[in-house]
Length: 280
Image (cartoon, rainbow, N blue to C red; front, side, top):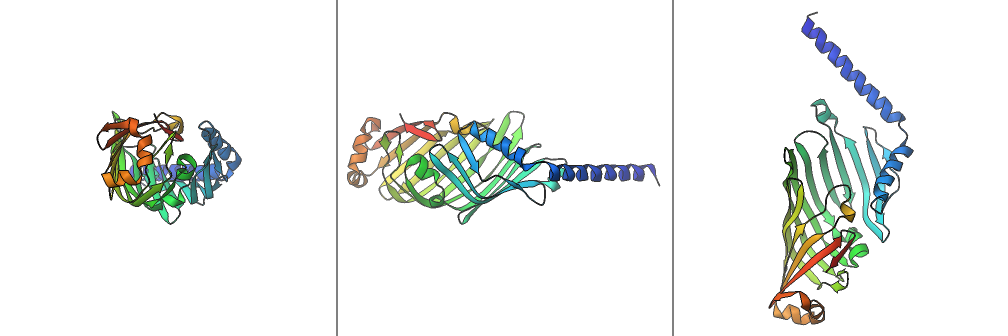
């Protein structure tokens, strides 16, 4: 046997041994401790997650009928959420975690690169806003529409960079209230925009909502990272109603009169946090 073949054989044995050791450790590691760590991290942001996770056949975690909540109530429901270590990526020297979630009739697929240049790849489609309790719990609103999103983020010397495209088909909402101020009800809106990541900073780039008699544009900085739920918001919502739309909801626009930037244009500064947005 040549020296080269011998070295390859030793490397294969070491890799197999390391894999078996990892599997053995994974099987013996207590789930109670894993769930305790997850709950501790979420509790720091005022969040709870039920029920606890369980192990999957391949290294990973899964939740059935997951419910993410705050002290105000339910925020997100998933029929199933699964996180798994990317074994093929691991063989190529990259550590990745793949996430798949079933939300109502929709699905979200995400790959997060712990190491390497590729940091995030996302695809979501068919997620019904009516199946997301965040809108009722946080905004006091009834919402409808189907969310689609895809994009990627890379890791470089200056931080994370990339973009995520967003589209909500047949968007509608009613009863939205941000702090003391309501928003006008709207239906059959065409909405699309983009989340851009530049050197680690996340910004919503001109998310437009357009329908009969109304045009709105939402933009600004979006909190990210481990404390995103409690980080301050810095968004601006511009509302440009046509006279007939304004007349139908004149009480709402009377309450928003202080935010009139020019005739027919309202600029609403949205502050607070993701879990308590306010117009100030």
